[in-house]
Amino acid sequence: MMKVTAIVPAAGSGKRFESDVNKAFHSLLGKPVILYVFKILQDLSIIDEIIPVFKDEDRARGIEIVSNAVISKVIDIAPGGYERQNSVYNALNLIKDKSSVVLIHDGARPLVSEELITSALESLKGNDGVIPVLPLKDTIKEIADGYVVRTLDRASLAAVQTPQVFNHGVLLDAYDKAISEGVAVTDDASIIEMYNGRIKTIPGDYKNIKITTRDDADYAEFLLRKTAPDRLNP
Image (tube, rainbow, N blue to C red; front, side, top):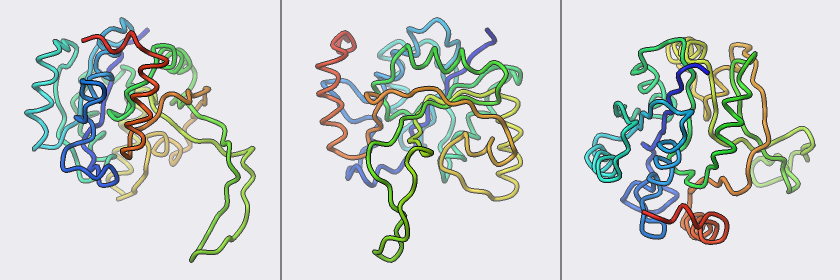
């Protein structure tokens, strides 16, 4: 396996979380959300390096968490950008080995499992990227101006999670093009898709929730107590 660097974006505004504090620092059962992510990446031997992404005003707090928890794989901290894609691009440019593998995982997804991370990395061979997806449970409708336009076929749709895994050189080249063209996307796989890259899907994990609202944080605490009590230790 090639060298693997994990990028952990945590530079969002958190408006939907309704807090002045970065949601990545919100306490889940006594530990910051992002620390759950750092710990699992630190403990996984398949991960060689970690690069968190923080806004300037959050950098000191991020360094404090890394230092106190002895997250030794953190080699650098990337500055947050105006949009998520700019943040990831900043981190990509800190990686020296262009032939390496990049794993990108949201700092607000604290319940990611070792199994999902390993599966994503092992599925990269022969592809430009790998993403975990979940089948949709609800009926999905396209709406406009408050009215239904049409009902979409959910059998051909999926919800996308992180971690997403890529060959570093392929992703960086795609980002170079997208940034220069002023293209905006909401996830990293979209960058590869734009330039006809090959993205493989693997089964996601319903417990791998992204904390966006306060209700998400409450549910994450429930899941931690019920399904991952071993991760509650300091």
